[in-house]
Image (cartoon, rainbow, N blue to C red; front, side):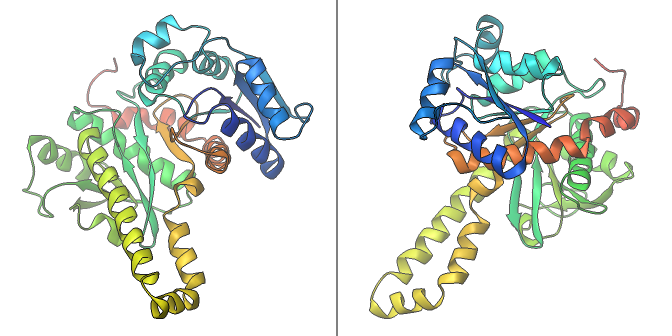
Length: 337
C-alpha cells in the first residue's frame, strides 16, 4: 500500500511530515510518497541524521505551497504546482491508495472535490473526526465542511458515518444519532425535524436525537449534524477536555500531599491523558470522496502525522468509498448533481 503525503502542509512542514512518514514506513510497512519542495524534504531527512530516504519512501518535487491564508478555491485552481494539488492529482491518477495533508482544510476539501471527485451521487463530502468517549468513542459528521445543510445531506452523512464506523473502526451495527436541542422527536428546527423522519426510515440503526450533554455518554457511535453545529460541538469538547485536564493537573501539583497523590495515580493519569491525546488519533477522514483523504491537524507533529498515516491505511483497507458506490441509490432523494 502506498500513502501520499502533502509534505508542505501544516505549521511544522516539512520536518514533521518527513519524520512522521519515516516512522510510519518503518512501523506500518507501507510505501510513502512525499510531495513537496525537493530541497526542503532532503534537508529534513538530513536533519534526522540520514543521508537519503530509505527504501519504500520517495519524493515528488512541487515548487509551490498553499498557505493557510490563501483563498481555498482560488489556490487550488491557480497553484497547480503546489504540493497539495500535485498530491491530490497523483491520488486521482492511481499513484497511491490514500492521502494525508495537514494543510488548509478549505483547500483540501476544495481540491479533493475538484480533483479526486466525490462518489457519484454524494451531494457533499463531510469531515468526520473520531472523539474519545465512554465505550470507546464516536464520530461527529459533519464538523465544519458544510455550514449550511439540507435534510438529504444529513441523511447521506449518516450513511457515510455508519459505513465508516462499521468498516474502518470495527463497530457492529453503529448507533446513529441526530444532534439536537432535545431528545424528543418534536424538537429542533425544520432541518432537524425533516432529517429525523428520514433517518427513522433509513434502515440504519437510528437511536434518535442526541443532546450536546449526552454525546459523551456512549449513547451512540455516530453523531449527525450540519457543519456549523458540529464544529461548535467539536471545539466545545476539545476546550472542555483541555480545561478539565489542566485543572486536574493544577490540583495534583498544589502541595506536597497532592503531589504524593499524583505519584500514586501516575499510571491512571497517563491513561486519562492518552485518551484525549489528539496525536494518537492523527486526523479526520474526509468522507464522500472517491478515494481516502485524511486531514491532519495544522499543528501536527511527527507522531500525529504517523497516526494519520495509520488512519489512512485503515480507511483504504476498509473500502468505504466502494461501499458508498454500492449503496448510493438508497442515499438520494433526487437525481444526483
